[in-house]
Image 1 (tube, one colour):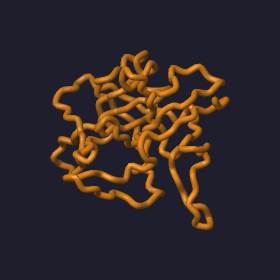
Image 2 (spheres, one colour; image 1 turned 90 degrees about the vertical axis):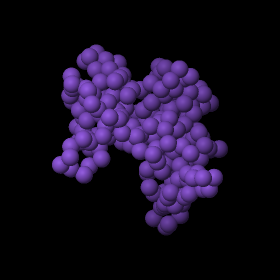
Image 3 (spheres, helix red, strand yellow; image 1 turned 30 degrees about the horizontal axis):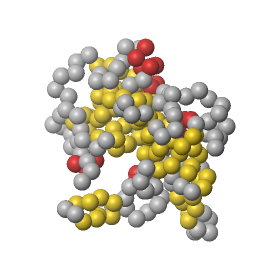
Image 4 (spheres, helix red, strand yellow; image 1 turned 30 degrees about the vertical axis):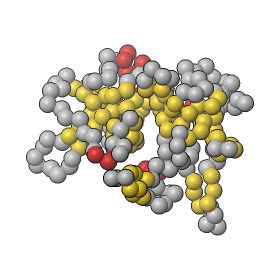
Length: 201
């Protein structure tokens, strides 16, 4: 079964990642279906669209937009699946809702997306943990490579352009290529930020 324009995917694990094990006990982090931060973004591709050529294949893993698996309450207060729900835990996913894929050889950016590792703020004059609008490029793409920007570079990005993701126990920002606006040549003394809650127990 193939959709003409959409991928068909299924969640890896539950639709919501709202529990964490601490010392063998379950801690419920969130009970609201409306909080997007706890929606699972890891999916497995079941079929690819007929209309596009794509490097993705069935059984590849993908990082997707949170609204694909999201549930919500309608105007009568009844809990509903998203409009992407197909049947039997399978969902439609548009091409622009896929940000990263893994075909067994590691994660790669998809389309015009890239991922950035935030860095620790070392300015003693502020209480912010993270340096604003600056990070280390973790997953690059071909359009950035053409500009001489690659994974490992220290870059600057536009305000409010980042989505938060946890990928392989790393806290990362997802953004578009044109949100990267500066490549810093001086890259010494930059400490990557990874909070303890990003790591699986």
